[in-house]
Image 1 (tube, protein in one colour):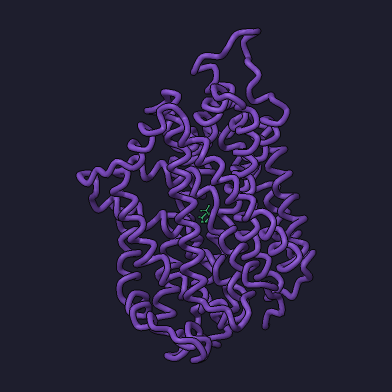
Image 2: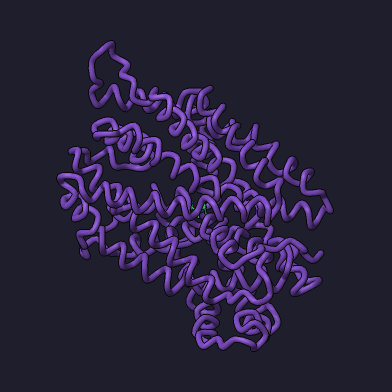
Length: 455
Ligand code: PFF
């Protein structure tokens, strides 16, 4: 069951792993959470969560994957044959697939917005000749999301793009794409930060995002920050276990975990620095800053008012599409690796088996934003139900199980050997990491779960 697939270079494996981590979570989820949870105060709690929880749990997942040398289920089976702990991996795989089916829809919107920015249609006024007012603009943008057919076409295109890349395999598909796209993404990020900070009322936006309001920091804020750290770092879904099974033996796992987490955090913080000055400079606040509307309604409105707005719009949504694409391929790879390892499928067959059902599942998620919107399951649309169940319930459960497994169940020397590359590199932090993985992380992650149900 061993995996012959491997990343070719150190840069390549970091680019691919950062590509997975940096996604829609950084762009729309983080700034909103920060803003509504006390600004800079949330940022501090978030940074603490990344250091105290995120990095050690990431090291645990990396060790599990590289040491187990297989997919998210097979790695458990290789380390502790005959035990049922592979079920933790199975929960992760299932969660990742549920997430993939709606994440692909949002990825589709990013492609749709890139395309509509290129054609200029996004900014063509609906009223003959005149400029649109706020409500008209919102309803025009909503058409791109809730309309039944347009988003579907772009979601399908994203599924096909995923297929084309994933077919190329780990080195020629995932790694090569990440090597090109990730540096591009960071360059775009820097350009955007420059543009945004030079806008007339940039300072107001910055203080809106970065003004620390410690009175808002309570248990909910801490739980939100933890949840966001897990979401953003792609933890608990088998993604990092799968990717690290492609890491060579000499990769220093602790250093890789720190690098990936720092880069992911940098993107999240820069996103806040980009979005809020842009939005407040054009006098948009309040409701327009909530959820999906920030990126898919409010920002286009900002672009519409900016000099050279169309170019910025093309670049921004292209940036977002890249971030989403490198994340969807990592989420899909979890199931593809599983199919290849367990059912001995060829790469092509595994890619088809994993991606083809998305044409239906993602369509249903997409339509649940439109004409199927009234069909509620437990009071949620299908899109929201998938999000709630996978990210708020399955993801924390899988993460707790991974921690218990690496802290208590896997052979005693296993974790240490992985972090020290069998004693060839010094791992000074091992005892701290082990302590966190054994005691702190399971308890803190459990509080995310409890908070969700108590709410
Ligand atoms: N880490 C990526 C992001 O922040 O968008 C990918 C991802 C991870 C998506 C976890 C969804 C998720 F639940």
